[in-house]
Length: 625
Image 1 (cartoon, rainbow, N blue to C red):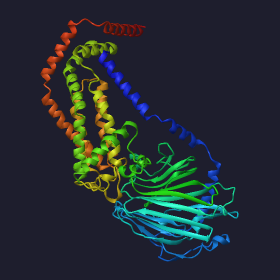
Image 2 (image 1 turned 135 degrees about the vertical axis):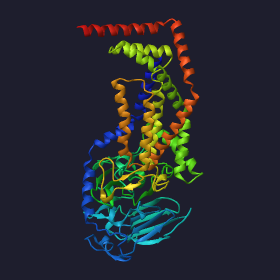
Image 3 (image 1 turned 90 degrees about the horizontal axis):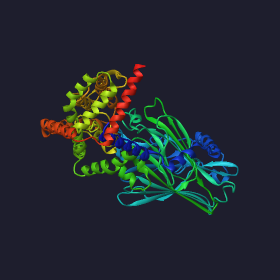
Image 4 (image 1 turned 90 degrees about the vertical axis):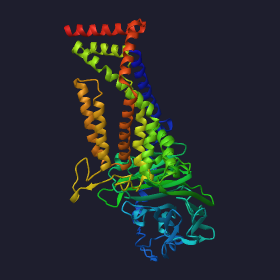
């Protein structure tokens, strides 16, 4: 093995070690994992109490609730609160440029969330939450009873219910027990923001809540609606619904997307989010929750819902005459720039990879994509230009790889001659082959290393396209939605092929065919004819066929990108072939051989050859025995 080869191996080792250190968990992440393993009995008791109370709460769909309705159930409450458990009320509709919210006076809670600028895959209004999707409220103790905010009907005091552009408004809900004890919810909303504020103030409740109680449990549950055409591929893309949460001064974390999970997240929790592929519902407390628990349950065989998510967090109660809690809620798209502007690391919910992969997406791919989007609205053309830019940036590496392959192709007859000469002596074959490479000035890793350096970019784009909400419901050619699969033929009568699907994606077919052609072109350049080389050729042909089923249900934008990349690669190789004169290259290799033959061997090379010779002699002695 010559010095160039050793240097090549050293570079590969350095890259792998670099990947390890970039992606290994930080100390804060290790501590978070350790904390997650600790059990907190108190929070489990709270969850149990809340679950029992939540089962008793009756909710009605916002679509089916009449404008004036009567409480269906009257609970036995202390006298001070009993009069707030029964009565007529109307849902309050609050709108801005982006959101349409319905707030129920019963519990003073948001029961309906609609994103006005988005539609579901089948053209319906995109509703993140409706009244029968879940619950939201908090509990506190009074006279040996657990009172639930969802059981109380608040009075709507004032508020403008529509706001636009840079204006803002607030809506106030109150329960006035007497002049010294007031429970108040104030919702604030801006005209052009997906984030709303909720201020909860408890005046005089230091006389209501027992001294022994040091916290208030807040619960939040919802069912995640299916908003995209095909949810099955979200698990493969890492975009299946899940719960994210963030501790103070730590990176956001999440629970498993693929199984039912119940997890203690006790600690200083800054925010938690019920996240789905392109949208999320996030509850934020900049002063931190003091403990929490989250739960996620996959809903099988339900057409409208994917998962049920639950969260219980605690707010500190310090028995001051006035306790105030300022919460924020984000109801909106998982759009990188939109989430990033809140400076809470909410953008980490977007599946853009880890380590260097995420750095490439955040630092290069997304800015380039956004820059191109300013000048044109056709995302198919934007992807084409993005592919051209990436190919130009990677052109030096691609050229070095092609040049190395051309050198190996020139040496192929001599390598074949060496194989015939040494027969089955593998050690001697390696020695003679490496000697030929060294004398010719060719590194066998010259073609592999440039391809290896391109891999982070390819993986980054593999993450970017399925996670980019910009591509959602954007049409190009026959594809109606570049964020989902394209289909030129849906199989009739619900027929489906295992591991393939119930449709035919044309972009995936084009990608597969172009990949097979590229494989065919490269197979002609391979220098080996032995069994190992033939096995590699078979694998190269089988892999595109296997990925045909994988990508058939994947983002059409990604398949389209890979197809374009293959086509541009064909053009590059044609230009390289014109630019590289193989006769001149062959002459240069011969000159290198002559120079190497006339040049005395270095002591390092001589020692390496002696070591290889000794190893070969030992192997021969072992065979004789």
